[in-house]
Amino acid sequence: MNLITFNDDEIAISYKNKKKLLRGKNSFYIGEWCLNKKNFFKKKLFLDIYQYSNLSKKNLEFFYLNKVYRTVLDNLVKSLNKYHNKKYPKKYWEILIYRWLWNYILHLYARWEIAKKVIKIYKIKTVYDLNFDNKSFIPDSTIHARDIMTTAGNNYWNHQIFINIFKYKYQKKIKIRKITLNKNFDIAKAIASLSKGLKYYNIFNYSYNKRHFFYDISLNNKFIFCIKYLFKFFFKIAINIKYLNLQKKDNREKFYLFKKSNSKFEDFLNLSLEWNFPRIFLENYVKLEDIYSKLNWPKKPRYIYSELAHNFDEVYKIYLAKKKLSGSKIVFFQHGYGGYFNNSNYYNIFYEKKICDKYFAWGSNLKEKKVVNTNIHYLNSNKECSYNFSEKKEIIIELYDFNEVPQRTPNGHLSSYDKKINTINMTNNLFINLEQNIKKVITFKILNQSNKKIIEDSLKSKFPEAKFLKTKKRTYYFINKFNLQIHFFLGTGFFESMYLNFPIVLIYDEKLLDKLDLNFKKMIQSLMDVNIVFKDSTKASQFINNNYFNIKEWWFNAKLQKARNQFVEKYCDSGVKFFDKIKNYK
Image (cartoon, rainbow, N blue to C red; front, top):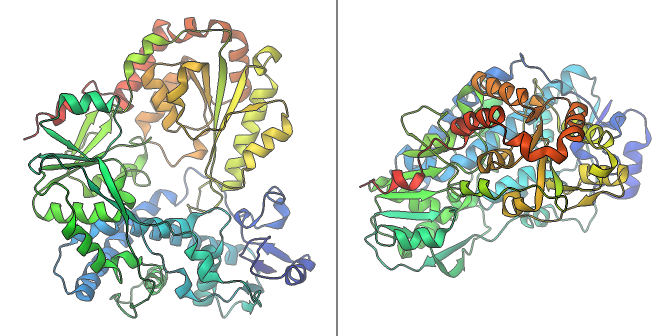
């Protein structure tokens, strides 16, 4: 069997070369992420190695990956201090690199396990190699590294990792065949095109003495909040946007110090790190230090707050790390669904909680020392009084079209192919079984994480008369325009609607999520008992047919509201408003 790990519509090689590769019946793609939209559902073209399981070794993966994270972090702390001639503690460097490091380990391990399973199941004779230079893949920043690894349609990093794995571990078993590239193709330019300019701001600083610095936070009616607490809190008001001028030269040979381990994966990870580590922490780190020294941001904040900036905003991260060393407290706000997974929410909010001093979590579910139980701070729960059914309003069906790029191992997780198939089938079953007068008032909203738009195109083909809403706005912004929401994924939108007390139905497939904790499973069952949650989309359609014109009576009945209130208290609103906690901090 011959194995292809690049895209089926790859522009790096000629059409003639591609035809040669695919001429035989014994050539297959390593996964569905290599296929274009036209070929995506042709299962015979790729190797199907993912098999869902509740009891597989995926339950132990997080223990192992956490161990790898700690080891590599220790190595990087030593390496970076030596490279930059510094003596910063681990907590400093971890704030800067934690997001990149976790993504790197997670994606590398997924591909390592995919390669291992492919070799175990199939007799691979040849793997085709585009013969790229590893150095072409060096990322500029954390967000550039993420986009190199996960941008749908750009499969070059995946190909390079798989080729390196096969060369490193399986070269004695298989033949690596190099493919001639088109002369006008430049892999370095293709990778560089994914890099976003790194910007930072001077800010309107009306006082250096404010003890609370809100850098990045969404608030319901922020203006009123700012006026009310003007003399206590400091909010970032960005002015004079600037961009980092990053150099592309590489000066990193053998910068990373590590010892050989007993694990082949860890050795491979260590060997690969040198060309996966972002320039912003190495060659361009001096510029980051220089920019920090010139910032007009608060000099001695007691508390620093953010929602998302601590993940990808490199200037903010060095500010955060420096102030942490000076005694400032770091506070992160929950910014999406989470807090209900097994194993300490390892694949969700684990590392954010790990590096901050306080973590403001939605609802009362998380019981940890550094967790502050509060509410979804950017929503106004008083909106519940405004709900009113109208035959002029519609139903909105919200769907996620997830990225095809593999982010989990094949050891019990669902493949992106099966996620899409499951979502399409559940949606089809629902729509087909709805009465015609209800079908007419349905609008689809697709949250596309993929540029292939597999789910959207499938639905448009199946239901050509269906309406689709094109917007990047979250649904809560225009929630009053609809009588009912229908969701097919247990994501942020579901928690927002439950909090706002707007009618919603969830068609629920647990396979789409990582392992849930037992308490949350019990809560889901209580929502099934009052017909908020369904596991069968056909039963959901029957319920909607029978109850749509009495949605308000169904939603606001006492039994449902009791179940909804219990859910909200646990996962959306503990009853404590976040600013009531913050304003007492000294």
